[in-house]
Image 1: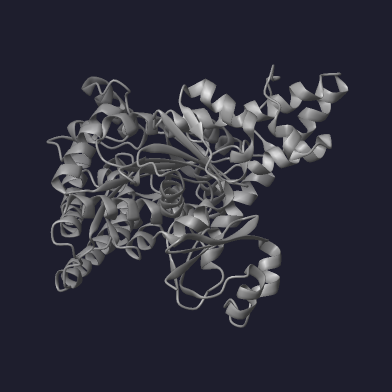
Image 2 (image 1 turned 120 degrees about the horizontal axis):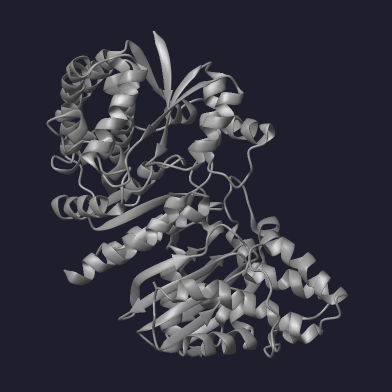
Length: 251
Length: 331
């Protein structure tokens, strides 16, 4: 017992983590739309039985939630913490570090958080635009018909691409293909675009160590480019996408 | 009463002295139930999407409210106003330019004021009488401001709404003064509020709704609204020239920084919320504030008049929580 269920209700996925005295007991991810369809009960409340059936969670003592969805659907006896705090706590738990810059690259959001002595010292978030986000990379990969895994390996000789609009980015890569540019260079260019978008935010909190979380943290090329541009060591914890849910368990 | 639209705070003493009534186009735009459609109307008329919402709102509100004459600030506020003036002229709205001289030069300011006085056919004596009258009302706004941060009896939103109205005195100074008198009396009888986090809001008045009240639901209160306070001319001045040179908003950022830093210290402010408008050149000032003010700063951006969106709420909530955690760590 004494386990905590953490729920990170994100824009793409709802992530679950359950942590007890001996560490992480459960990790699970559900598509956000499916979660709302399957788990929503009466009066905007989540049906806990359905939630447990979907996530596999049971035997927990408390639930802590974060993410955009947390205010849309109510969960009984659930405490709520801001995303920034959840991600910082999750990264501290997963890495064992206390001083670093945390870069959470999600589906729509980019959060850069300065963590000092294990707590949030300051943070910035991207402006209202999906350019340079995970969704941007997904769009590019889909447009070019390649997997995210293949995209993640493309680092060398990137083409310079616009970073102003996620939608126009798609037509830009189509133009580059028609110009005969090599696919690997276009994919590297898309990765570079994300890093270029990130650098002004990273510049605010210089640190020797950058921890990356969120789906984009799985992109090896982006991590390598980030390390090269900043001179910092870039670490991705074991479960970058579940970091917010893990942080909920730590609050 | 003949109405004169204004695009931001100007020496309204001159307008009143001439027997006209100033109408702040920003205020009639953002308080109108049609505020969202005003933006759409302007875009349908041809204003680009990537232009400040305040400009588009002022354009539509001016035409919709049938205001045929506008004093437009062409130096010291926003360069978009230049073209807005030209578009107003095409729509048969008479426009009168007013400049806050960039170098804060008193001779140039005297000339700007003289040009406006000449246009409205009033002299310094008539204007001075109105300055004294309006400063009496401004003193009541200063008292409300003091009751906000020192007595803790006025909310950030009340402070904002009353102080921001001093650009045009709600087009009726006598009625506005009575409203302030009633407010001061009522607020004085309140119990002091006790929020663990004290915030300041700097930058132009937010176009988004609910910023102040949202902070209060998370244990914080805005005790300083930088620009609305400046609209109420807190630094006084012995003459009209001096008064509008001490007003910090339309000049270089230096005096604004000094003013903000002093108020942070005086009002024991824990953090600053810097509001920036989408597509506004003043967004660049964020860099300066972040380098020069020694308190945490949260920058939020708005584009059209609507309730705070989920993203902005998450940012504000996290910002307040971060300050609370810091304060607890110190204790």
